[in-house]
Amino acid sequence: MIIMYGIKNCDTIKKARKFLEQHNIDYEFHDFREDGVNPVQLRAWINELGWEKLINKRSTTWRNLPDETKANMDDTLALVVAEEQPTIIKRPVLELPDRVMVGFSEKSYQTLLGKNQ
Image 1 (cartoon, rainbow, N blue to C red):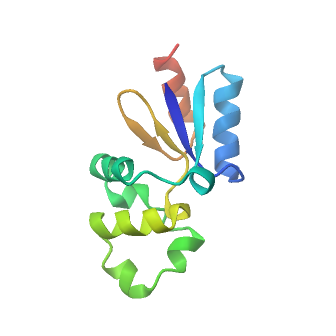
Image 2 (cartoon, rainbow, N blue to C red):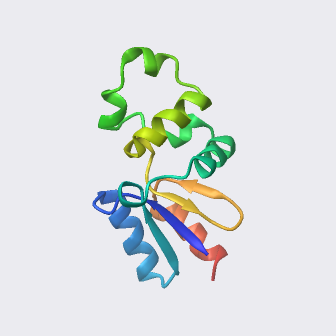
Image 3 (cartoon, rainbow, N blue to C red):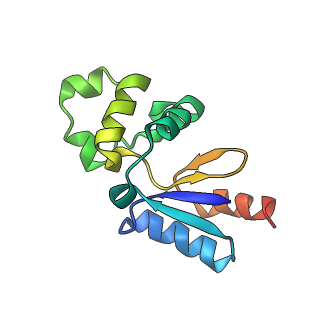
């Protein structure tokens, strides 16, 4: 089962969900705001992807962090910040049976579609 993580009113999430639905790809949606984020899962994502890929440095949440926090960001601090403020996580996070993808592009999702047909 594919699980998409994000925030339902995010424009990128809307595009990604529309893509999956148009291509009849079954998935489950997990809303960070409503359902929270599991710290064990968050650690697994950071271990697989690295905090640099998982944390959205262009987000308002990132910009509002203290400069000291941004300067000292590492895997451990990213875990703490993302648990407290899941809106800092780049969206969508797509959990597949064999890997995790972050962000949305039609090209990467086309590759996904080809692998899952």
